[in-house]
Length: 130
Image (cartoon, rainbow, N blue to C red; front, side, top):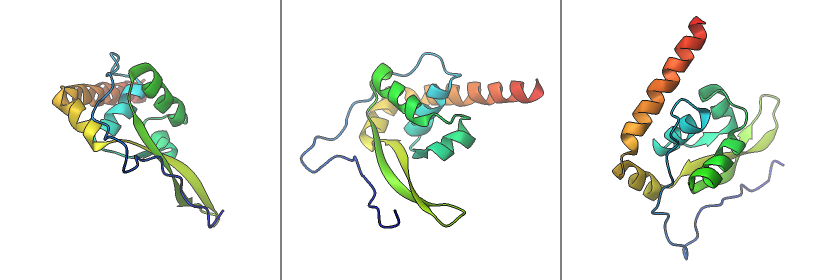
């Protein structure tokens, strides 16, 4: 596995750029909403990022739902990561294209992202106090 080449599912030179964005979830206090907010903010997420950032071990399922249920075109590729015991493993990395981000932000996603961030922070505070 040390010589494995990362798989990249990015667009080829012949493909049109992704200039559309999907729909935003109505519920803003969910893992789906928070993952999408991070992607719209320009973050690239791996499963480990989602474990610590969004408290989910099911990032691939969340990405699938965002694609199927909300129409988002989420890019992905496998990247190499080194483990504490010396192995090299491939993990999926997810992101939204810059074109899709720009369209989403131009259509009001910035306010939605701010709302998601606030709702998820409040949810964490309530859980910690609980």
